[in-house]
Length: 286
Image (cartoon, rainbow, N blue to C red; front, top):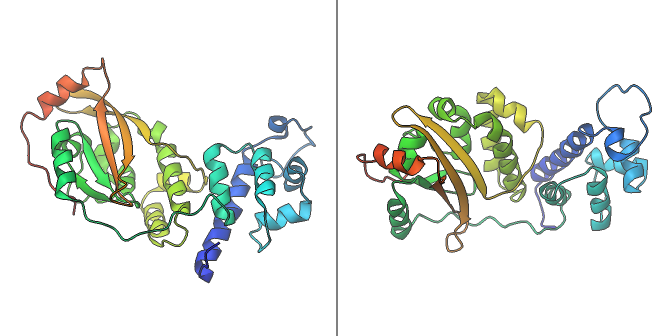
């Protein structure tokens, strides 16, 4: 485990404590085949119940959930993951918070968007596309993404815009359904770079600006995935439905290309072509 500053290690321990607590709180004894021992002051399993399910000592599990400096093994983390019914993404998140494998992704300096990638975005029109960095910051956005999603000069980060761009939220019919997954993916990305202060800064600033984000962030959910569905009711042409795919760019570490394909048999492509029959040229996000 690479050396961490005291602040970085404290953030990791805080994350581990809150993650275990929230995972435990979402389960009931019935969920794990245990008898209900009566009325509970707080929802979810008790620590001693998780310890029994995982086959570890109650004191040891309590210390782990408290974020104390104790040694953990892969076998024990796997047992806890099974006891808490963690998904694959959540298990990976638990490993990262505990300082074990999967290996952390090492942050590398940001690289500029090349002219070739700008041409890719331009060629993708009239379909929306953009390039974002590891912090979800927009590095380049094509005209269609600006017109369809309502991105303007003040939109610099995909996560921040999701929760603060009023037009995007008003026109996005799947906003509430997709919001928890958006936040869960950002938290999973943050865990891959425990020494990067930009992730917690973005989260803290956004939590202060958006109660919706703050509530979802407190849940400590994590998720992975490179595909999503987006549906927009555009004021000029009506409903536009897209299948979005995120593609890492191996030659540009830290950058991801996000492409939106019109959903077949929805009339989206025809309406999109009509909407984009005229408009401004591609511009890099600043």
